[in-house]
Length: 293
Image (tube, rainbow, N blue to C red; front, side, top):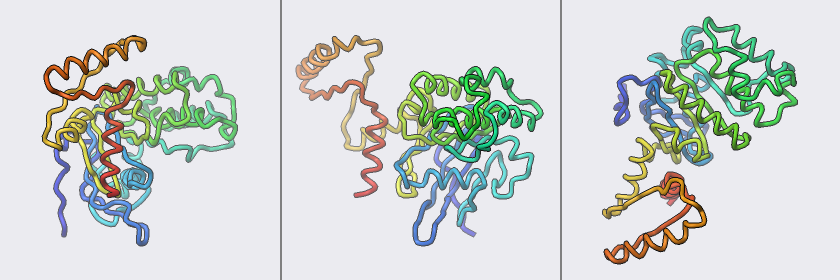
């Protein structure tokens, strides 16, 4: 029997533990020894390009797929053999999937809440996510963003200990996206383990406590967003200094950049200054590009 080491830095209070996950679809290898973990009371973001293996990993973790090899433990149990009790403790949001198209939005949410012993207050949740504004609309007539909000509400209404969210803010406007990100942090503060996949760096920076970067079915980086950026930047043996100018008036950005370059030049240092760029996004692009070379 082959054994796999625990992921480096796996938390003792892990709600999700995946060791050496392997999964193929015919000749296509979707997961090649993926190991990762997600802690209770934290937001874990799984990042990577399309086809990297993110969805396969989540589907194995939610019991929708059976791994070819490796182990998956959700709240200490094998999700493939999950009983009703385990499923009631786990929330799942799959992008634009699994919603009863002939039901009205609020009716569906109220029905879902009735399945749990101690659900969240439905009216309060609906108001928070703006679902009350389209609560009487049939699901099949909802926009993509409205479906996403309803899917998120359905995933968390039962107060799950662990929740999987696939692209939770896809199709949402900026204001609602901000509300959802605040909600994710609130969920984590109550002790829920939040696992999300996303392509949007706004959903990661300032929200995620832990990130896992997957490319071609393998984990290529993991850790806090800051540590992943720092490790990547130090790979060439040089020291990199990073700073954020919070509250900067855009009109003064060019002048400040010039002054910073001049100060650096006096120390014999070449300084690259960017405005508005997400460092983590740049690192993600570099890491996944390296895997294709």
